[in-house]
Every structure is written in C-alpha cells, then in structure tokens.
Length: 199
Image 1 (cartoon, rainbow, N blue to C red):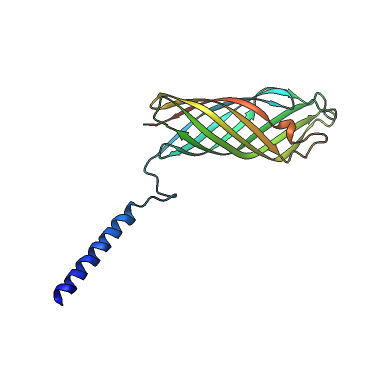
Image 2 (cartoon, one colour):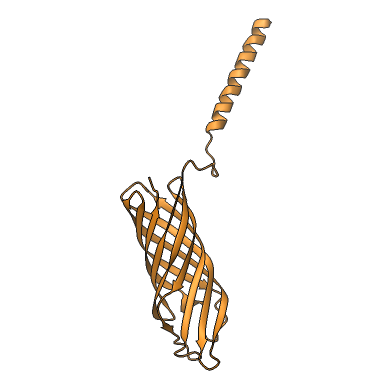
C-alpha cells in the first residue's frame, strides 16, 4: 500500500513539474517583448492636395518591439504654397497638416534591404486664407488614415533609411463649401531617415 501511495505521489509530482514547464514555455499573443529599440528622424512626403503638388515634412518617433513591431508618433506639415482651385476660394492660400500614431511591421529586419508595412492614423487640420476678411478659415477636425509600404535600408547600426509609397485617406472635410474628402485624398511618396540603435 505504501509503495502504491509512493508511486502515485511520484507520478503526481512529475506531472505537476511537467505542467509547470509547459506553462512557462507557452507563447501568447501579448508576450512581454524581449527587445525594445527606438528611433527618431525626419520624414518627408510628396503628395497632392486639391490637385496641386504638395511637399510635406515632419518627424517620426517610434519604438520597435522584438525587431518587428513598430509603435510611434508622427507629424507632417505643408511646406510649400498651395492655392485653392475651388470656385468659392479661387486663388486663396491653403495650409494642411496632420499628426497621430504610427503602426508598422518590419519584414526580415536583419536583411540589409527589407520591407515594412505601415499605417498612420491621426487628426488633420485644413486652413484657407480669406483675403476679404483677412483671416484664416479653419476645419480642424479631419481624420487622416495613411497606409503605406516601403523598402528600408540598414545603412549603419544607428541609421535606417526608408523609401516608400502611401495613400492618404481624409474623412470629414466638411468645413468648406464645394470641398469633400476626395479633394484631399491622394497617392504620395516618402523618404524617412531613422536614427536609433538597431543592433
């Protein structure tokens, strides 16, 4: 009887230890990242606004989790003069900017040349200058969603350069007569310099 009890105790203990080992090795979706890196750098986008070529620049700051998952922030501001083609505001100067979060995934990040898929989601601000009243008319509650794909180059352990294409979707452009979302949604090309530690 004692032998049977001892055997049962041994099997129970072995099963418990095995279960503990399996439990500690289990992989989950929300695992604690083993590596966290980060970068900051200038970001330039060439696109179109109301049918006019627009040069936008800003900054991208992000953290990289486990070498592949990107979470950060960005801002983009219009750098050149754009003039309205709308009959209600013909020739009036325009301004546009947007800022928000940056999500991305890096494919094979250790390769010298690799690819990233990104999406930017943020708040936009559109302004048109009224020459008659000498003031800016503003629509400051525009939602901007910009998916993109890029080729990224490992130039050095502290520098990556990304070149890619994106499409900017704008929503809720309703502060100006005869303007809609499609007037400020368009394709774009961008280049980004990222300074950090990518080892």
